[in-house]
Length: 269
Image (cartoon, rainbow, N blue to C red; front, side, top):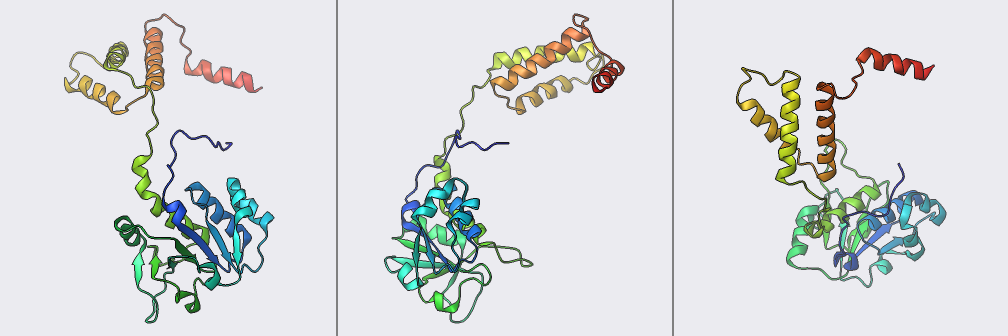
């Protein structure tokens, strides 16, 4: 299935996209850098910084960046964490490891809740190398250490997964602004037509007969309404039961199962 860049409902722009800067410390795999760029682009974030990437290959990163390749052309590279965060108002690090000399830990959703009460200034979201995460020497910059909840058996996320989860949580306040996709909905008159067709078909085939428990037709009508079809789906349902009605009334030819299987066998020869 080919991907499409046109979606009926998309996230509106967010202030977080301006103040949040993703900073990857010594990322070792350019494919991960590309995947991070893609995750950022998915959620409307554009500020990406790299600290001393040992083997940054823009072309290799582009393989996993998908439509986010322009971000790879704008990425800024710094030799040290000090220089990468020098113009930030605050720095938060993402790490699952605890320690006596480490900044205070906070769960991701708790930190995002604080942001709703007091929007931050320019903030660096600091992510460590893929193999061992942030080191003690990186943590002196951090006001908070953010932990993304995970299974005790496998507590470590891939770098791009961590970035995606963090930015996804930051994007949550925008969800209520996403407009629902508008589709024409059928009115009660259309359901009335469907009700009559279904009742006729079920009577013709003997499912409705004398002695049928009285709640059954009502349950069937309620079931049809709970499917909540749009207008196109209602047209299909009406067409299906209309064809069944005509077939049961002898108005259109009916192929038996044996005839269908025989026809399929002939077409495959």
